[in-house]
Image (cartoon, rainbow, N blue to C red; front, side, top):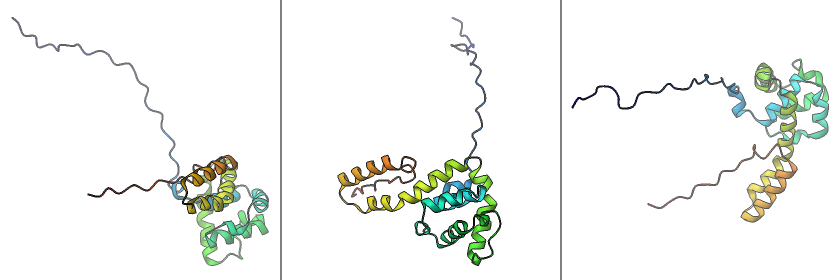
Length: 169
């Protein structure tokens, strides 16, 4: 008998595969950027949104005092979205500059979508916090379902992870 050195199975030609399409990664700042910051940046890119924001939001919905200050300035004078407002505190001016510097990269062409989702996130925040305070799982589920209907763009933003059960070793 002769031993063949050829492979038992001949390699077959692989079908041509097109190279993967490069995925546009989000700017690193968008991963941790708050809805408050995203809203302010959207207004910076489109100052006419300040009036709509003033009608839909109150400054009290902003948790970070510096963002509350900037928002109040925008609602008093939308020109503050394009030029650094002199009446801002030192911290407010620093925050304004940081937001303005990254606004176009972070928000991009999706200004209207980001504005709309940020408004919903801020309006819904107190109601979603009520869900966190509930202890009854059934009540929590019912309230969350109602909020999902009321704020369709928001639910993904407010995702809860169930705490892991510890196993005793």
